[in-house]
Image 1 (cartoon, one colour):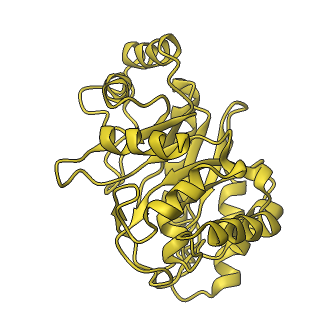
Image 2 (tube, one colour):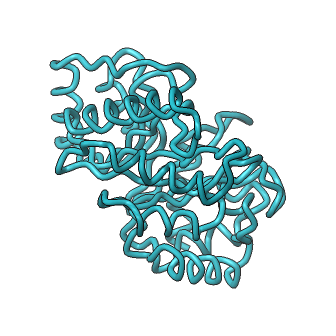
Length: 276
């Protein structure tokens, strides 16, 4: 079972491997810089080499780079589009330098351009990237507030079908739940995977962001809870992590650090649910 957490790179990217090991994880995710600002990845060659070596030595992987929160592939604004494409190009290049196979990105918001135009904007923006051979861009499911796209699995399927890139997807359980896919029961989990397969294809599911939700299904509110402690709950989470659709899919946690529980607690809880 591949389960890990989104780790900090404070002090150097290689530190993320040590933090992952401390939390008991064997795969994971990082930002290459603060996700709240336009900033280029600043990778030291020696630090990058240590990251690669320690990941291989301790069998930690796959890793995922999560793109900046400022990236908006759906935007109709030329300046934001260019900044988003440039940022994504730097992320896929950083992934290649770190031997990281995936870069994860949200589609973004159409901000009034309309759903179809927003999706077409995302496709054309992704098609401008020069993605290294060993790197794959993952389009993530979204909670869908405002004009954000990606809350409907059909949005992901459209982008994968229309893009010239060899894209795959990341399914976020809290986002899907907030978007109206009820993961709180075994029947709901089955139905959600059926809908995902029909719209996207389970063979295009490369990663899961495993998060419980602090808000009700269909509220479009994105706030993560500890595994089994939110409104998806223990029953839903158990059904999800034991579903055959995720047998070989890495599970990356973005759970909160609160109530004296952090990533280590959530990783262990995930393993307990899988074993049950």
